[in-house]
Amino acid sequence: MLKRLKFVIYTRPFIWFAFYLVKYYSRTLRLRVENENHWKKMLEQRIPVLLCAWHQQFFAAINHFGNYARYHPGLMISRSRDGDLISGVANRVGWHTPRGSSSRGGKDAMNAMIAHLKQYGFGAHILDGPRGPMGKIKPGVIRMAHAAGARVVPFYVTADNAWFFNSWDRFMLPKPFSRVCITFGQDIVLEPVDTPEQFEQQRRYLENLLLPRLFHLQKKE
Image (cartoon, rainbow, N blue to C red; front, side):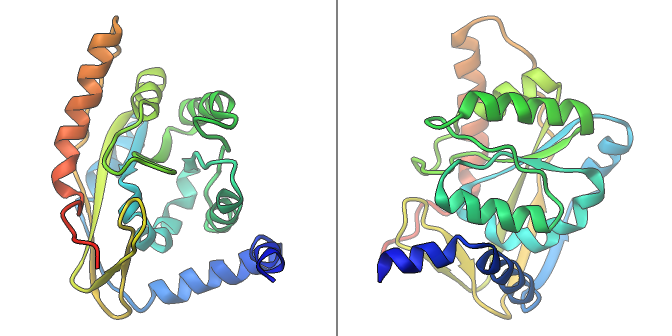
């Protein structure tokens, strides 16, 4: 029974169902977006932009990010069955999805994502995904920023009423009709470096800068 259920979840009809579920669920949220125009102006100036968020907080932004389809955004997604579902939904809101992870096709996906950023100048990245650990920034965001000359623009999602799952990232799902705010931070310039030590300094700098906006103190119920 469980095997049959998993098969249904990853079929094309279910992906369409998930897309519309996210779409209409998101419409119940009372959404506010802050500080969005500054990075859009950078795109107009042909400065590559890489939006970044913690895995915990990306869900509430999915529907709104469909508004960015005209910028040809890219998002690297793992080659897992869950990744198939996420990629299917992302493609339907206008996002390109190079596939891979640290363990499965990561190098090819990273190269594809860098090429996408160089061509279109816009993408997004989950900082600690797809499996964590929570709040640990992976090196991919820095490598992409260096290779494509992209500005890193973090975004954070808050909700006045939300569920927190008992998952590795304490995944946040805003409750219907709650007030949700997507806040974009100031752009961060990560200049190319010469040594692994300097690379690690940049990674820790970025991690320490963004950790305060992660809901890592939520207690498990």
